[in-house]
Each structure stands twice: as structure tokens, then as C-alpha cells.
Image (cartoon, rainbow, N blue to C red; front, side):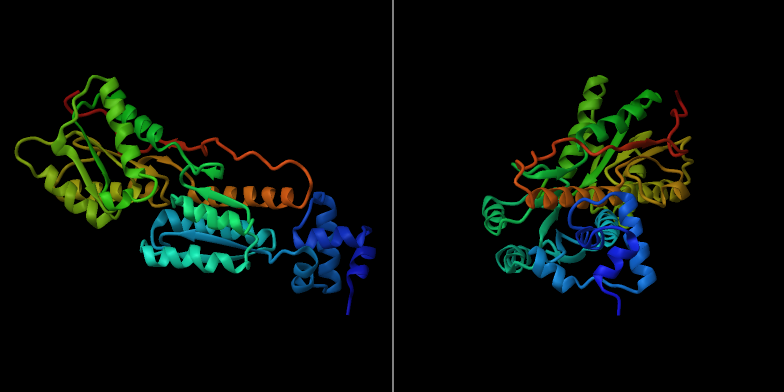
Length: 342
């Protein structure tokens, strides 16, 4: 059976370099990593992670805490994070709070305190002072995804400006009667995402000196079915309907498109719809949207965690928390156009 020394000899590097290359702990050049991986493959050598963990004091396990895994955004964040962790030879432990306080308390008061994790990534959870103190007490790196936490590295998009940009697009096409479909109050529990997007919509309308019709401010549950019901009722109102709508998620935009088609309206001739997310079904629906790339956000959160873990093994000064918005992308398709009367 091949040993780590055999791999080092075959790759022409030191034993320490082999250990770093195969464990993901520490910096190794791309050329050396490739040489080590090829040598290990040829010799059939597999690094003992138990031994590596004992030597490094690491479990090679990252915890991810999120309120649900059933929604498109969270599933894609998880997919991106999982792929990045796999590439780096790390395991993932998922904690799903299910939106219930008792589950959340169990996670922060018990599960995360068992010292089985090298770091923690939270997704759209606004941690309380007590929860932050619990995490800091075990001295593990923390990365937050989806909202700003004090003195914590954060990966987030600018929800206010995303919604403002989407609204400005509709206004630039000549729309004046514009509706907004956001999330119900239950989705405002943590970082107030629906509220931030509504604020961006209202700001853009105000800047264009356009009135916001309260009857056209709708909320749903971020699902196609919930949006379909709300939008169909609004478009059926005999006292007038909007010519365009901003939906706070692509899935709700899909529901809005189907509702309009049910009523015999043409898109975008009679009714324009724009979403926010970058859902993979957007192209099928021809949906204009602002893509936030949640899978890439998950990858970025893991990359930042790896930087923090590398930093924690040195005597260098701790990295300052990142405070830049994650880039988004405006995607123009066929669901938006000037209103028919323009």
C-alpha cells in the first residue's frame, strides 16, 4: 500500500505539500496540487482524514444553517456551496430551522456548540445578539449570506437597487400604471427582503413622479400558485388594470404570466412582467429579470470561509469583514415591452 512519502516522491514535492494539496489546508500552487493529485491517483493513495483532522485540529466540516431547503433560492445556494466544498475536500452539515423558533433554538444552543464544525455559514438569518455570542464563544469563523450582520463577513445583493432598476426598466418603456407583487409579512421575519424590494419599487416610482396605486400592491408566498391567484384577481378588476408588474421573485412572475394568459391577455402587448432571481425556467417563460445567481453566492460564501480558515492558522491580523454587494445581472427577454397605448 502506497504511503504519503511515496506520493511525495512521485510528485516531486515534500510530504507537507502532499498533505496540504490533498486536505485543502494551506496554500499550494495549482501545478503542485495537480501533480500531487495525479500521483495519488496513480498510486491509489487516499489521505486519512481522521489523521489529518487530528493533526490539524480541523473536522473538515462546514455547517450551513438556513430556514428551508424547499425554495428555489435556498436549493441553489446549497447546490453551489456543496459543489465548492466538494472541490475543497470538505463535508457539509445542513441545519434546517424550518422557520420554527424551537428548531432554531436547538441549532444554536446545542447542535452548533458540539465543536464538530470548522465554520458556520448562515443563509438569510438575522442572528440575535445571543446567537452571535454563542457562535463566537466556540471561536469558529462565521459567514452570513443574504443580509448584513455586525462584524460578520457577508455575501448579499442590493435588494433595494435591484427592485429600483427593474422598475426603472418598466418606466423607461413608457409604463405608468405599474403593479408590485411582493412577499407576505411572514417572509419579513429576518432581513426584510420583501420590504427592501417594495421600497426600491416605490423609490423608482417617486423619482419618476408616478403615483403608486395601493390596490396594485399585492403580496403572495413566493410560489407560482400563490401569485397566480392574486394577479388573476387584480387583472380581472373591471375598474382598470396595470400595464406592467414587478414581481419580487421569478417564481411569482411565472404565476403572473400564467394569470394574464388565462384571461386572454397578450404578453407583453397587454401586460409586461419583470422578475427578480434568475430562475432557470426564465428563458422558457421569456421572463425579463434581474439575476442574483444564488448558486454563485453559495460558492462565494464557501470561498470566503476558506479564506478565514487559512487566516486563522496564521498569526496575521484577522481579515476585515467583506462589505461589498454581490454582483447581479439584468437579463432582457420578451416579457417586457412598451404598453400598447404608448
